[in-house]
Image (cartoon, rainbow, N blue to C red; front, side, top):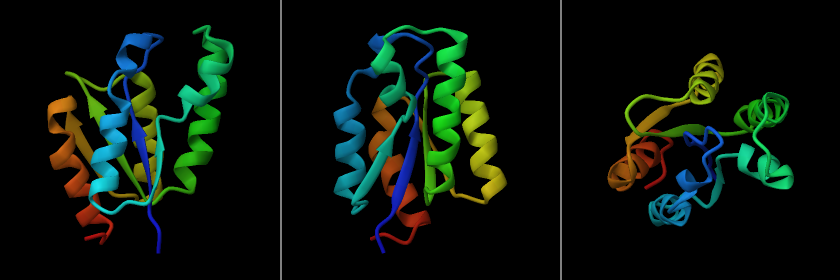
Length: 122
């Protein structure tokens, strides 16, 4: 069975924070997760390129649906999670999804291995 991992990222309207998403995808793919959904609001926000409360709300609605079809959640935090990440975490917890936290980009490899183990992908 193919596994889908939802990856949260502290965007907060700062496009500089999107650096190295290829690294996130590579680390997850390297441990055998074939389908990867990463930071879903990016899809929505990039269509308008304007960070407003209305666009964030629209993005979070998309996120909720994406989390509902995911098998697990990996959050990338830099210090503390953003308000959007905390909302996404609550949704994943309510669904009983396994959750793994990567403490910054340097922790991605370990987090990818942990979520793969949680999901039974080896």
